[in-house]
Length: 140
Image 1 (cartoon, one colour):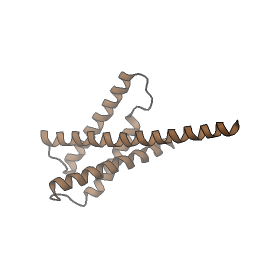
Image 2: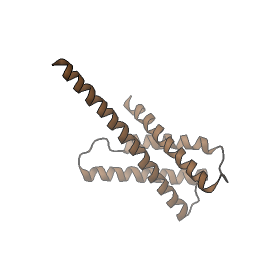
Image 3: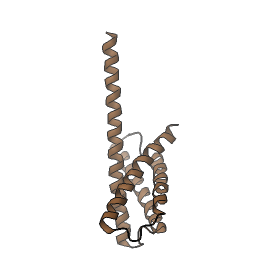
Image 4: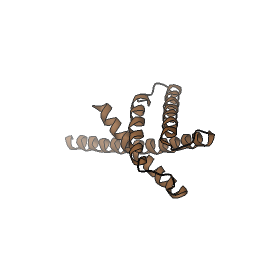
């Protein structure tokens, strides 16, 4: 059950990040070449990258080095999937500029997603700590 819950959580964060980036790109470049199919492709890619995130992102930290390697592998896997699908969907051209654009886009969405996940987890932990303190104080 946690697997599906985590996929849904990351799907929401990643879709939001992708839509924000999509809007920024629209504002900068205009809507030339933007198709309705993009609105279907974004959630499809968010689902694929959410599953990758749940499978590859380190949930337990054994050592700092192992954690950094797992994060790097996760990020590279996301880049490969997004570059390949970006080329197939026509989001980017198969050249250095297109690939760099996608790698930077993945980094931006990565930062957004894990920033939101951190804030959400922190708020949940703070709420749990407050509830535990209240319970301890009421038992005295």
